[in-house]
Length: 418
Ligand code: ASP
Ligand code: MG
Image (cartoon, rainbow, N blue to C red):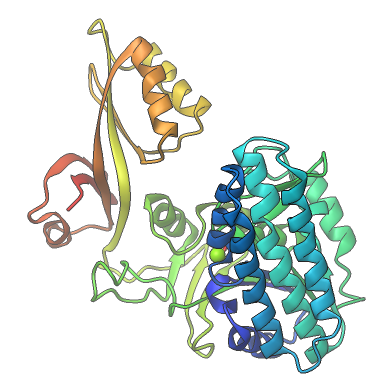
């Protein structure tokens, strides 16, 4: 069996869903289709949530806009939309009722309860369309099957429990094709959780790992994985194949090709991931696999924007390493802040993190109680894998470099934003 993943851009309108169906029709093997919310629905639901949390009645009109958008897709997609409209109506009412019933928890909790509806709506419409095209198609509510802990907005998978349930619910003897939601899961208490923005790739990898898939295909609006973001370096070229290691390093450094957590579950079962274009499905795309070879002499450029460089020193001029090191990173852990780069000298530790305020402000506050902590904001982290002098010159020319770090395979620069 295979797992196909379609992101929001591929299902932003009726044509997108017809295209999805045509891609699915080419696949003769058993298939799990993981689908994101339509187009920019997740962003729209984030707005609904913020308005609702602020007690702003605008949340109702914002939600109605999202509803009308889904209705339009249905109207254009189905000749006979009876049944689909009713089901979608019920799913929208669930969210309306939830909003009326009032807040039950903090921001992260409510985020997951509200924003997760995008995937429930999209998958129920896509499943219905595929059902009419191909006959038997199963729709799975992943919330009762992909079990997670209750770290809302960044939930961890409970692998053993999820594996039991997913293997139990998916029966290719009953349906050759299953459609389910990316990005969302559920905890043991029965509440919805999410896996982090753009988490549908991760869902596809989890399903593949649990079901022992032969392959995962992520259908995107780009021809594959390039050696740089073409908006940054317009002469970027496509890579035919890259290794799991290369993919993990690239995503960790900030390449927005796939969700960074996607690779591990695939690597662990040696399942290749194929990135292909839904616009030109005949294109070969890029394959991520164990024994891939990168074109020699091809640097890979990655830019991570909106970074903060925090410099931490013990107040009494004691060494930064040793006991201080674990104490410093304890604070990053309890604030849930991911570290993108560490650089340490005798009396100073420099750490580069995403500019996620107010979270980072709270971290710095805590650090300041025990250390001296200062920061540079409006910075970027530029990485080059398989670098050459020419490649370095190309991206650092006329940039103010705040920090540089070099290993045999990778060079990183923290530079001031332009
Ligand atoms: N719909 C979610 C998002 O936009 C998940 C995803 O697209 O992967 O972040
Ligand atoms: Mg999306």
